[in-house]
Image (cartoon, rainbow, N blue to C red):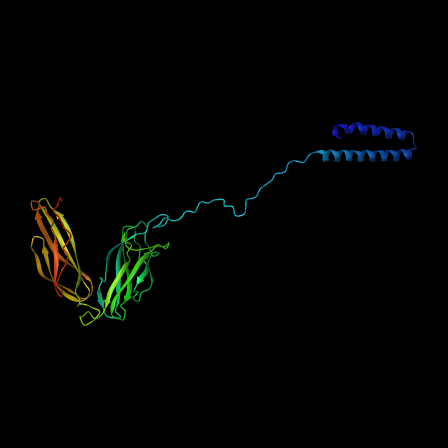
Amino acid sequence: MTLTHRYPAFAILVCLALALASCAPAAANESIIATSVALTVEAQEAETAAAVTATPPPPTRTVTPLASGTALSTKAPPTAPTGGSANCTADATFVRETVPDGTIYTPGFVFTKVWTIQNSGTCPWNKTWKLVYFSGDLMGAATVYDFPGIALPGATVDVPIVLTAPLASGEYRGNWKIQSPWGQVFGDSGSNNPFWVDIIVGSGTPENAKTATVYGITNVTYTIERRCTTANTFWHIYVNLTSNGPVQATFNVIQSDGNGQRKLKMSFTSATTQTYDYGEWGQRFTSSSNARWVQAIVTAPTYHEWPSSAPFYLCGY
């Protein structure tokens, strides 16, 4: 039954109740009326329940869950670029050093090795950067050293460590590298070679089986500075000699034109590098445009002809 048919039925029931009430005593009429009203209400409730039951329920929504372990994204998180942090690149270039390779020390001698290193990267260096032991002979050193100061990109910094010559005679070499605050370990720019210390422990005499010769000159390099005038070219020449210990050296410096200086002397009290100021060599612009060079020849304590300098030219060439 729908709601539109409920009201006529209700009216009929009320009329029947009133008619019966008019034909009965007062008490009976009251009983009849109460009974009729109760039946009427009961009929209404039944009709309402039927109407509600007849109304169809709304459709239900089915939700399918994600399968266990379903990945929401397969994109990898960003990582720092190789060779640096997110904002800079770590790089270093060797400039110079103390304690030349082959320096001879007596057993147990304490010495300081200093590398001068250029910051050739884009990261500023400070004490969070480290010099770390890489391989070879430790020679009594610690394995990690803080950088001694700040070096902005392009600047140089001296990095010293204190070492002790081993007690046994022989040749010893220790290799070191730089470590960035994020853990990148690197050496000299380009080659990535470590920064090393190379010494010989012995007496420095031929009697020592581990040392082939007495102290002597172990390396020679040249520094050439060119100066130009309106009519001439001048080259200021410096000769850099390195010894492996205390020695009195005698040497000649020969120019490519046959001139030069001879029987020059230089005294070394320890293993180090000293520079001889040769002075200027000048040529007019009308001279030959061929390359010039100089060469050092050590005559004592051991005779050795060292390679000549790199070629240098007149101004304008």
